[in-house]
Length: 230
Image (cartoon, rainbow, N blue to C red; front, side, top):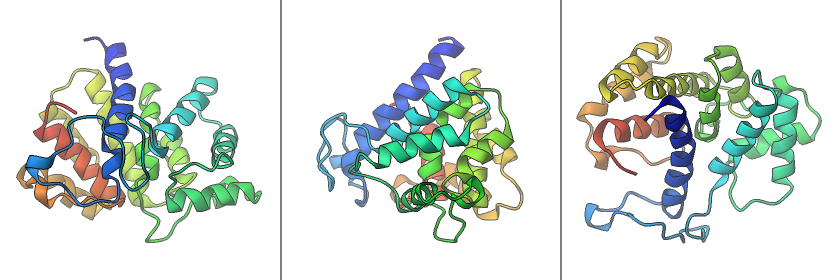
């Protein structure tokens, strides 16, 4: 598999994982004999089988915006977010909602993203994969994150995740991708380091399923480390 095939696989894989897991959103983990292995749909928001959630939809908006300007025009992307909100989507994270409302209210980019302790959701992490298709640039990554989730943990999670995707495109093995992620985690993000270090020893039953960005980041790397299929 070449680099371009891996990049395409990343974006398709995001959609697959998103749609596969959509009916499990907001629910506790299932027992092993009840794992979801087919595109069933349903769940609390009554998803159709294979229907994308807000995560895939926002990923595509970022992809389209980067295709126009790889340095990321936040005004172009914000207009896409606003247009999407006007369609009354069935699912939208709280932090993302209030950030888009700030855009609609005419505030400047520095006032869009939320900065509170309870604004550290996974919304930006779930959509940021297209940033791995352009050369790594911390400023651009942080600019995208801050549009909605303007916190240290969210920015650091996106940075580590994007770098890990680029490692995967280059064909690095799982162990090296994981070790690089640990090395790249800022020392100031002590909880993030703690979560990532625990991955080799954490049983799946102990993975948190909230929308907290560090819970989601750990679950993603746990899945990389312990599994070989969607």
